Length: 206
Image 1 (cartoon, rainbow, N blue to C red):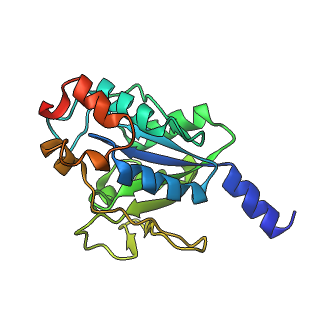
Image 2 (image 1 turned 30 degrees about the vertical axis):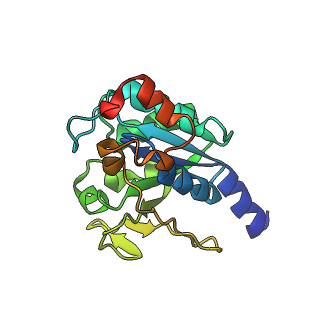
Image 3 (image 1 turned 90 degrees about the vertical axis):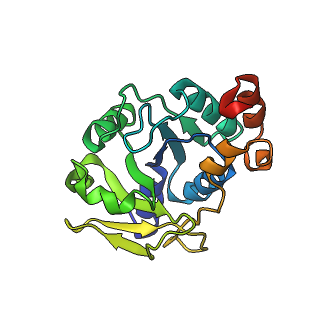
């Protein structure tokens, strides 16, 4: 098998894991996920039931439903309902491997959590869990550069829009906090159907 074919097959067996709070999901999330499709055959969204570093988040069921609405038009997007309250590296990727035994994974995180990852249990086992790469979305105001190396030698790469496969995604200035504060003013930052859902369910004081 030549190197090009092997590289193509490896990519086509790879799943991009996009974990987060998604409170609410917005167009920058979707744009980032669309760009991340260059990394694998599909993107799976993994909303966290009980975020460990954020408080007073919207009910998980609503966040899950809004994600499903925002992603339904793209057949290469899938929203997963992880059964545990918290997402820890080893249990999550073992659960994913059981669902997709023939696949490897690429993991996308926010630049706000990248410096914290060195202390996360299981980060040293990413490769053995089938994780072939970790990329971070460079959010507005982040001081992280093009890559970030953890103490154990794991390197995270920034994901930006670039033409070649040595990639990167740029996260736009849209953020969930500003949307929660004023959803009507920021409704154009929401994917189709999400604003209508949050209004119908009385979310964010609407």
